[in-house]
Length: 529
Image 1 (tube, rainbow, N blue to C red):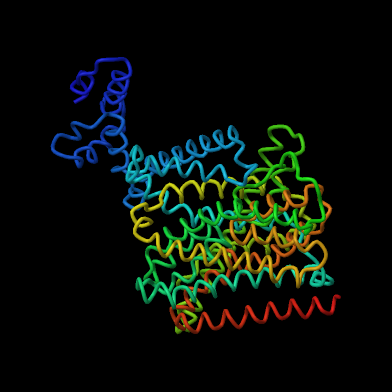
Image 2 (image 1 turned 45 degrees about the horizontal axis):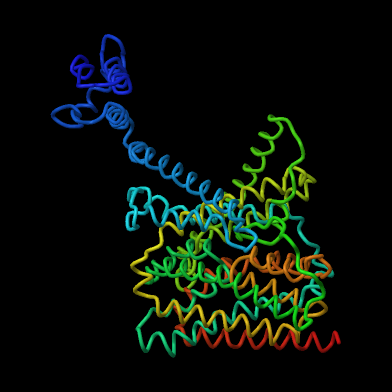
């Protein structure tokens, strides 16, 4: 057998070496493991795997010799390595192009460029170089990566003291709630009175504006399995497409909004900045994540840096495990109680609970005076890299045929969300926000239409000298509402409530909540004046 392989037609050094390695491995005289590998090799076929390249033959035989419970993961390992390598190369290429074109200055994430390149190379693209198994593995990544993003969000941020916290940010919170529930409202109205009568779309399409505009690519991708389990399998692809539209719209329309604000004297700062500072284009979390990314890591030796990374990744892993444990506990309770609670928990993904794990880990560290273990730059870089990989994988997996088919509902929802966000920004914000209302409003418009980084970019354009208090109010508001909106509990529960209550009831509830939030904002503003 060894002689046949070694003389199997190799024509160059690169071919001869694997054949010689194979000859040694499967020669009982040279390798005592050959007897153990012989049965799995025979299982490959009558010719003992003839026709396979020796490295693949070696791997197949080695996998077949493993215990049965290890064989399936082992077979997937080469594809997994290829998928991660291809994703890393794509992201590196996208970042290189982004730096060359200075795309961050106009609020376009480099990861989006990488995803568009992947879309060209996908099996359905014009240059299909990526194999289908790689795309299948990428399709499973968003939920994993978003869970890691949520686990890092609050680990490096001191927990706020509740006393005296509400007054400075109350108007900002109420404006954000009005924007978010209003997106559910206008989407519900559009689906009920336009899209369902004309096109017969799923009522769950009423969730897409909030999940795509408020949550972005990460939330849209992570909610895909929940939508599919509720009978809306195209929800993920449509949400990703809508998130891309929102990202571009927030930059273009938001830039025009800032120019109008300056011309009308709404801003408290002038002139415009010559350049923009570093912006976290991933937009996967609170605005302070961008600040963490911009903060240099203190000089350390290689061992100290490795130890710091190991500790911080371990803390993020603990937050994820806490979320997994909480989800298992909730599912155990749901199995006993049944009913609507079980329906909600069965479709609940793990990433909102990873955020709870992040808070609990931070609380324990502060109580034990060990919060110095956490590095804000490392947590920020971990979350940003995860978000970039997520956006790249999700964008590369877009179903172009589906988007061509559903362009009309996407257009209706995009316009409805944009009109609502502009109306709240221009009509309600000046009446409920305190000093620096335009700066506070424009950062909310950017975040509620695109991502947090879009809001930061617009704020930098409107307030280049950082004279306003908008950034502080926005950061605290993000800390308070992140567990609820933009991929939080309300985003997760909304499709479940639409399924169980019906879209008319859900839309009516959102209308009532919008009236409550806006009225509270107006009342607080009148008392403040």
